[in-house]
Amino acid sequence: MTKITKRQLRAALREAPAPELSDADLARWFGISQSAGSQWEEDAPIPRLRALEVALKRPDLAVEQVA
Image 1: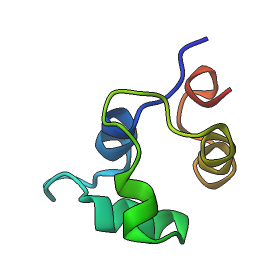
Image 2 (image 1 turned 180 degrees about the horizontal axis):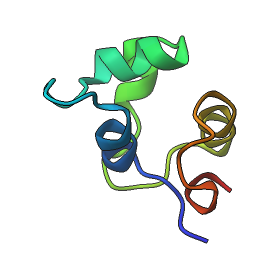
Image 3 (image 1 turned 135 degrees about the horizontal axis):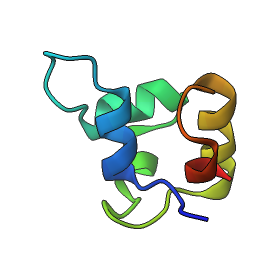
Image 4 (image 1 turned 135 degrees about the vertical axis):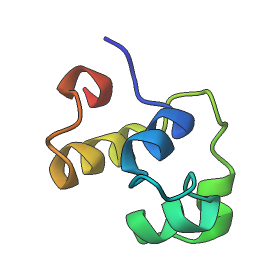
């Protein structure tokens, strides 16, 4: 199954016509420090625990992306 990357998550959480979310925005969404979120590589899968959090907070996102 495909894992969701930070880049994909930013695009999925963006509310048009707003610009793409920053590292700070993404960190606030997860309730973590900006430095923690900025350590995630842009095109690597986000940590599994955070992917599960995405599935709980946003079940509308494709399940196979966060499984």
